[in-house]
Image (cartoon, rainbow, N blue to C red; front, side, top):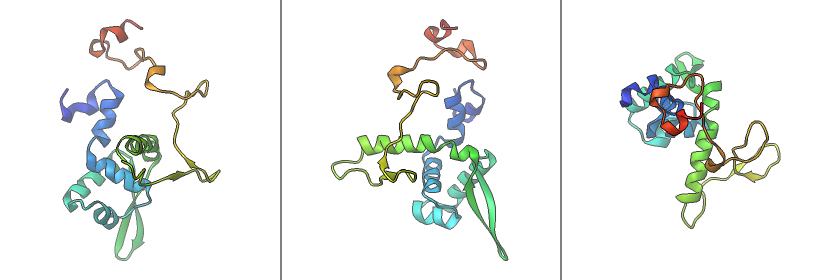
Length: 162
């Protein structure tokens, strides 16, 4: 599997990584979910080189994760807003943050607390089954080939579950 060919793999993780699979892209997404929208805001908060930032923002807009929207006409100024596709990445960013809170925060505790706007409580996100509403962990899920599977690329134990 070649890095530049991930988008052509018969694997949803590989295809997703072809869009969001580098540290700067994930940091830009983190900033988007914290409310940053403008190029200068990303640059200042991340300390990222302008050409790297421009490249990642273009990649995210080309992949329909962000929309570039004008907020001023004279002179024209634009900002970046999460699309529906981009908003769908929130569980990924939340889960990464929660993993960091648990395994990387140290004795000081997490740097940010997430508050559910509806109930006002500090919360953690929980992955649940769409059918029975039970919480999920890696031990609770098995996989079987789907309609887009490349059977030759699957491990034997998964291929056998057809």
